[in-house]
Length: 166
Image 1 (cartoon, one colour):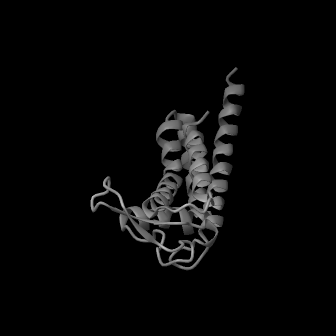
Image 2 (cartoon, rainbow, N blue to C red):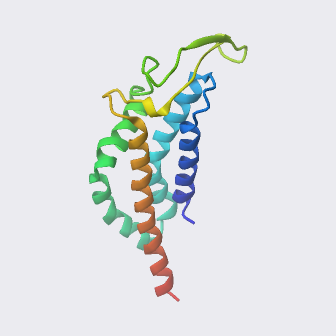
Image 3 (cartoon, one colour):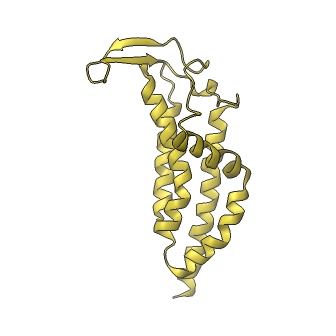
């Protein structure tokens, strides 16, 4: 199995946790960190594919030929790349506390936190919007589907090469 596939599987698990709607107040930082982790990992799937899975000359050349097309895909160009850059390079574009996605925010004593308090809230991912007002969940799902298609291409290419080398 490709390492990038294992990474995508982890992203799916994180998204499932992010989508969990149990009406329990949790630290806002938990929701934020899951969102940031999902975005960062979505962008790094391509890096893992390149740096770990496609280091041999054949797969590397194939990937170099595929990357220009993949980078032009709408979900990559308009979501994965810019969202990762906004969050990790500029620290903007996270989940807004003022959005309808968060219920009433409470403050609870938490000695494990630097200020000894945690902000907690319920979270409804279906109401989560990015800073442009677009729903977050469909874009995350589209990004996962995009990488799934790309990885299937890589897996099929690898499988064909193994069969041809037998």
